Image 1: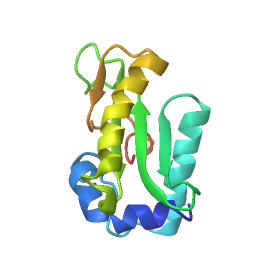
Image 2 (image 1 turned 90 degrees about the vertical axis):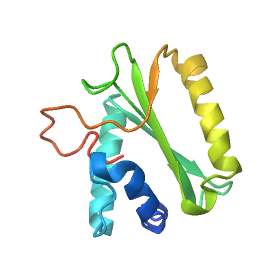
Image 3 (image 1 turned 180 degrees about the horizontal axis):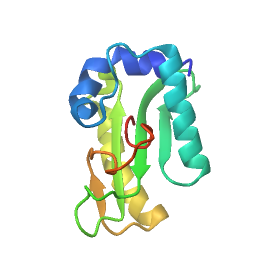
Length: 139
């Protein structure tokens, strides 16, 4: 959490442009507590093997540089999709080598290591009927 909140809020406007309309994330008034709850939600999703969230950190793991999300397809995914993937990097990494490396590596990784055949790369609404406010409501 100590590294998540500054990364998210330091890149909030660009993250809102990508995720905000669909997920409502990250809200301008995001608090440390709300961020902690989001992280706990993701931890629960991973423990249940429902969705996966990977932190992109610097070499000493002291700074969050971005995140990669892998989710099951919802009814909003294109027909035949077997996963939905999205990612983000902090503002200072946007358009740079790290972002390009993620854009190249993630599709290959999902194919080679996960065995997905048809990944939708983008941001989709949470499943209809998801009343939890969790899965898909924030990355």
